[in-house]
Amino acid sequence: MIKKIDILGIQLDDYTVREAIRRVEAFPEDNAPKVIESISMKMIMETEHDPVLREVLSSLDLAVIGEKEILEVAGAKTMQRMKETEENDFFFEFFKRIERNRKRLFLLGETEEKNEKFKQWLMEEYPKVLIEGEYALENCVGDLEAVINDLNAATPDIVVSILPTPKQEYFFAEHRDKINTKIWYGLGEFEGKKKYGVKRMLRNLFHRGRLKSSMEKYEKRMSENRT
Image (cartoon, rainbow, N blue to C red):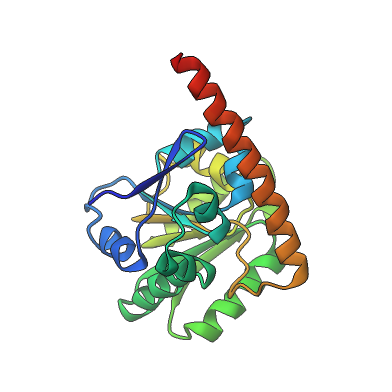
């Protein structure tokens, strides 16, 4: 059963973690990388002015709602989905299976420092995970062919991107036909286990207010166009 929520005209998946994992396991085996991304409120709002980002989000093989406030604004806040989203359960279940099935990863990040920080955190949670290669874009001089060459040479099952949005979406949109992997998993600026401190709470409240306002304006435009 297909479960979707409509946010600013973009159809995003609203599966439970169990359902989402089943969809990943059912991805067909072909040459095209399957695209999973963790979706934030800021990312959704940027689609209003960024057609490339909008196109990427609209064509995802699996969208993972990354912030519970998205569910609230969309009116899809069941207790189960709110809890799963707040605790980032899909990520942890996904990597548990990667570790168990000995899948090979390639890490793509913005800086060596961010890559190292993510790797340390990941290895603490999943010590047997196989990281076959990595690249920090700060080290790339000129075009990005060197990145693609290193990535493909590692023959990864999964590319994990911790590039910030929209840089990761632009990278994928431009190079998807050259990337040799089964799954592209766009995490954006991953924060690990989410801790809702005051700073994060205020930030999310601000983004929630902006997203709600954008949705109200969008729905008003759609209503006017129908009359």
